[in-house]
Image (cartoon, rainbow, N blue to C red; front, side, top):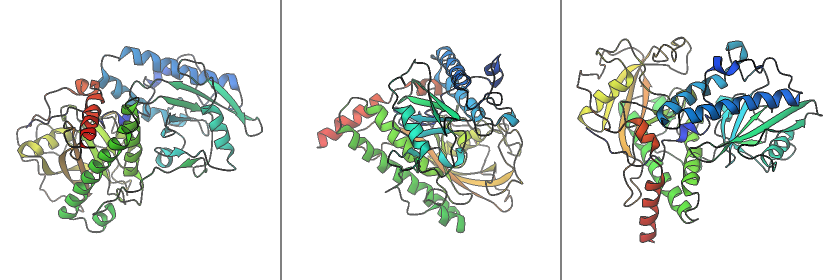
Amino acid sequence: MKFKTYGMLLGLFFALGLVFSFSINDAEGSHDGADKVDPGDEQEMSTLLSHAIDYYNQVREEYKDDRAALIRQLTIFARDIRRNSTDGGFYKHEDIYMIDVNDLGIVTNHAGHPKKLIGHKVNRDAEGSEVLDTLTSLLDDPGLEVGNPPVCKRYENDERVACAAKVDSDLTVDVTNIIGLRHAEDDSAFLPPDCSGFELGTTAKEVYEDPTNDNLKAYVKDIIKAVQADVARITGEESMKGLEGIRDRITARIQERTFCFAEEGGDFKHGNIYAFIMSADLENSTVIVNGNNFDLNGGNLALEDEELDHEDKTIAGLFSRALAGGTSAYANYRWDDPTTDDDNIRNWFEINSVPGSSPKRSYIEVANLNADITGAPEDVYIFGSGIYLKEDSGDDDDGGCAIAGAGSTSQATLLNLLLTASVLFSIVFLRKRA
């Protein structure tokens, strides 16, 4: 079976906040990391940020012709940039860390409060927040332009300094990188993502409370319907505003909505029930959105479960075999249950292993993102979610099937496709209908 993947409406989301890409060891060089800089020294903070930007530009040039390799590097370093110096991190030490904000005000990376604030939006209407005052003074500084040196502002009675520099993301709207701005997790300077109207008939809570195959399947199907409707609505609204910058506007708006997948207590996530979206090209198996673990976004599912009864023990291979006979399937494998630490596998990313040992059954389904846009080209992804089993049932759903081709085009080629074709097709047909 081969899935058509013409457009890439979701394919660039995970890279929006991953704006640096180089090895930690290479990054250190002769420069001081966050553990050695003075948070009140403007020169030291500016130099640390400039060093990161310089390396980003070098790697951007090196991988400009291999988008898949670039995104792989971005994913690896995104994990490192949120790692504290005590764990080998270079850009984070205690209350010195990096924050990334795109030109639409969305926080795409936050090393200080990653589980809470990634996906939040700058609240320019907040009152009485020194954090907002400092943040907006950086974002609105006329010197904050791509290619310019960092701009810096003092705060907390001039005892600390925050610096910002903007980079061309190459992928969508530009991103501003900020270092030195510390704040509480609940500061009013940030608002949660807008999830209004993004509701499901069968919620994650219902699946958590009654973890049956039928509930799991209904949950995934309702997610597909909700996302398809949202894509059509956003595309229609942005098309009426004109063609200039439409690709970036659509991508950024949908990206903001995908952060709803990670909102604990919402329709999409409850306990250990969450959703994921991945590319239909299972040879590269890129994870677009993971509602539980931001570190997986942009990575791949060539992670091995040694207990799978097949020569190919990767999760990507398992999914490919499961989908060999159609567009939906159940699959059993081991994974990390986020409600317990007892199943964690150490250094799973480095050893190419699944992150946990808990038995899990997932329902996966191939779906066209543009299904609600008349005449738009197909944009196909794999949606899924899973329930954790109390004990391994022995039904691994692996079946020993031959691996099905999930796309004849390589991921590198797919990730180089622009959104323009999909968007323009959508606009043409929307206007004809109007």
